Length: 555
Picture 1 (cartoon, rainbow, N blue to C red):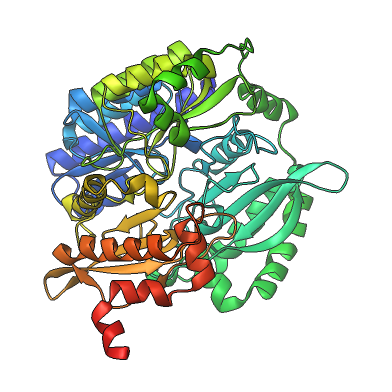
Picture 2 (cartoon, helix red, strand yellow):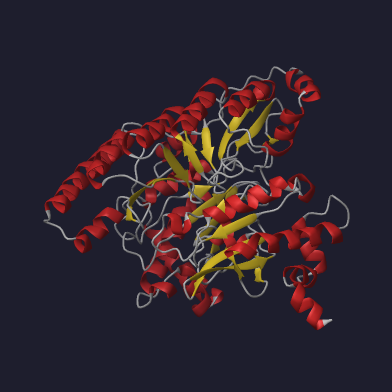
């Protein structure tokens, strides 16, 4: 993985020292909260419902054992003993005291981490496929591209005050595990007809109050042209994006209001200028970045340890079935560690759990960890023969829940438990769903399904692209939950359709029971997933299950 240069170290330390002075001025009263707000947001510090919240960048979701262990230390030393992993592949600390934040940032800098550009109207943390560098279906590791974009975008003088926040994602695989089409710019690594590597460029995706699927603006941009092409997109957006209304300031609105064809013409014209002026990326810099992501030295010795253990241990077998994915090296597996134990807060990990994950990465996983946008932790390089030992250690720490891709593997934003913008709770809803379907013992019978929950219209829980999406709203002071059906976060991204009137908190889980009971009755065999059945049958039978009284009246 990438290691800081002297420039990186000096830049991050300087930002910490600068912010330390700004914090002290706020504490002393020299700065009002209004004056302090833009300064703290530049350093990832939010003022939430009950306290400050610090959002720490984990660029493209990659970190090592030392960094994970430092996050555990921060959680214990300055927070309440846990951290919350987010859908942006970051981690949030929900209870830091303002006076301690500079010390936290200093501790992060000690392990080559920071909180820069995790907020504000700038280019945010670049995200990528959480199986990057390990996936069997990978065309190319997207992380060198993501790291190049991180360096290019950090403190970019032209793009620090964009009309609105700006998000970029990169995928290098056949399967889109990075929700690429939900980003302002999405990049798919491709090879052209002569085998040269480049990118399909997607623009104008986004969720929130106006969900839109990103559109391909160029089928292929050669690697050498990537930065000037992205500069062209950002310049057009920076000049033409709306600044009169923050709800209409995202690039997706510019694409919608201008039209893709006209916007493409503007981008191509700007690209001609940019390419002529662009001096190129230093060849040695590119070589150094790519070398940072060279695959580890794998131990390809095959054994039957795992196969023998599977014969005698059904708990391990269930874990391997759901939580272990194919690795590009047949001697290895990709292990996803669920942070969704039944009844727990999705995405939360205690300091002890973080330390264990660091230990496992160093002992068994070539010192690599990944954070997924689905709020889980990945051990990307585990020898298959080591999986039983890894599973045993996870099980002892409460981290061996075998539910990846199942109903309790729910994405959920913090909701009204933490967020000042939320209009309803998300965490208790996720806990109630997981608990109820565990009681019914239906999780494995239902099979693969994506449930995503947002506590407000900003859609941090990605509810628009859930097979079942849940949006919490306030209706005259009462929580009300809308259900959407048929969303998809993959390459063929789709925004879910609202099913009908919302449900009260107590009525939501029974409604989901009816919905999934109906699915089990009408699916074509156990291999037809919920989303496949929905696409085959349409919304009607599922709406009838959600609203049985209306269905009876119509009959």
